[in-house]
Length: 159
Image (cartoon, rainbow, N blue to C red):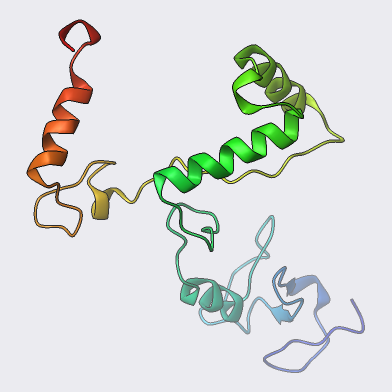
């Protein structure tokens, strides 16, 4: 570490008290930081500049990048059916569930192979009310939609 210099004091001495930021690769003496550290922390370390940049990044809704394309339920179903038909090289209605599950577990256990899919199971619960419209939102159901929801929750024997 002889060639490293502290980003704050510009000195290269006391290399046993240097910290290397994993974010930007800048170097800092532990005693030059505000507040100063009493010892070199174990594990990875990020400098104040990188921590601030991370804090200013917009939050992803569910901890991962959101899709750029929005789907309706119908367009998502069409996209999913198209993917399934292409992936299994047969009409979507002919792909047995057991084959899909077997392929899923094969891919999970494979180190060499991966498949990229569009994930669509998370819903903003504050905006959408845990998957169902809430009162006083732009997603409030019409009276007809409420009847459809009620019917869809009835046991099959009632329908």
